[in-house]
Length: 306
Image (cartoon, rainbow, N blue to C red; front, side, top):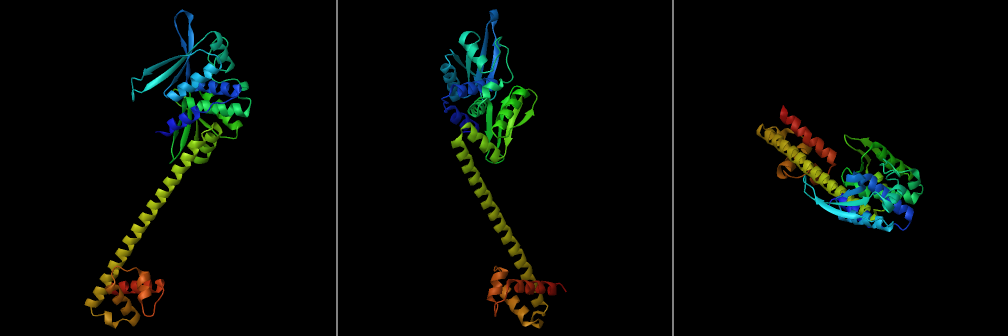
């Protein structure tokens, strides 16, 4: 399951007890995934359009907690994956418009607001509920490599409002404007973790950290394996060059004219073509350091070049 779905499912299962939190969450839901619909004969409705059934149920429960009647409809998208989407229609009259106005979604005249008034997010609990609602309504998350979280909003003002709400909680969201919408986004494990914890996605944070550890361990194992392979290749190539040098010196009749330590090292290399320099140093009589063995082998190669 994609991380974005995991995020929505976990956050949608949280049921805030305070009315102010429910109102803030409802406000964020409609500001990120809602739209105003004008029908015939002056009828108006506010529609929440979501792709996740858990989000639809959460929105329905929130509206019902405020005594708002909601009409739920489903439809299948014509493009992309032809997935089922859910629409919650709130009639723009009576109790419905009153609650939407209290949540800062529309004015009393049913004009849409790009961001709610500050009273909706006056408390810390309300700000966290607003961030939760925004993530449920239009949040997306990718990772664990190069983690990226963003909240899609229809206007830059709405994205900046989400960023301001996060900032009031000591969290960071950057804002970027695109062709037809704006986003409030966070990058980096620490920034995303703090935001998810503030919204209440504790389980997902554990999953992300676990995946990050697994990815880091796999990456380290691959680096070590590559390093070992590279070392083996270098050792093999060096040994072949040393063997060629010993063979050339032997064919030229010059090997026996060298000093005893060089002759010994040449014989050790010829008898042990796959040994490392350290192992050859240990087999010398008496044993020598790896650096000494390396110098002797390099001397053999230089002498073979003349």
